[in-house]
Length: 255
Image 1: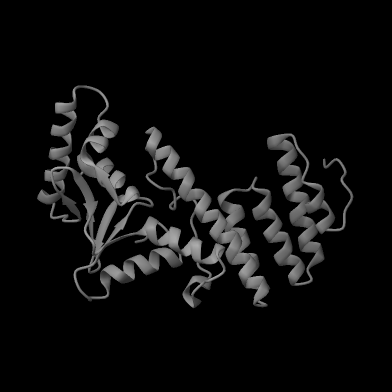
Image 2: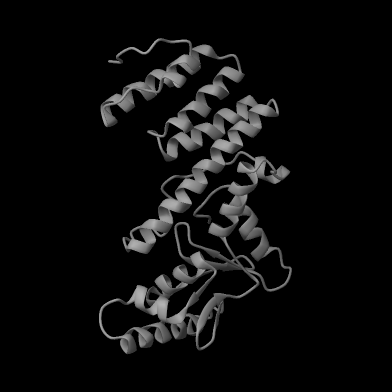
């Protein structure tokens, strides 16, 4: 059921489906949709952008939201579109927004998968992970895309911000697992990061370091050579000297 199959998503759905209270999970990754007590509710098409806009900011000024989401036409028309989007949500039985005359915000009992993902990444990057943060699960790069098919400028910026958070989290997870002697799990964490962004040298470096932590020098060298060929073909560059030295090689042209 998840758009993001991983630790952050399981924390979100657990909060919304464990039967405690009236918590709801707002899933933007692969969505948006809402999960409450195990039941999925699809967001009306005319309300998706508004809900995502508010969720990614936590709270939003009504005029700013209206002007950003409906830039064509008058301010009055944009304000009317916003009111209609809020009404459609409530009519669909999705009660996740607090709205007054000036501000829109998520209900306090609503948790967003993107928010949980960012907190997960922050704990790992800052070196204060929970035990549950170190689980190795399957991450689907396509399903984990935030608001797929949307190309509004504000969506593109948020998509890149979340993507960077996710990648930094996976790289930090790999480092943490290596430090705990879980090199095999570190390899899998690094491979997840590489699947998300094969041309990201920091992700490739973590994969190589994880192989070396298992004393699999042949695997490390194969990973390096595969990345070197990819970087040359796609970017016209060679791996950094630091990465080359890591596998005990000299900078050479890769064919």
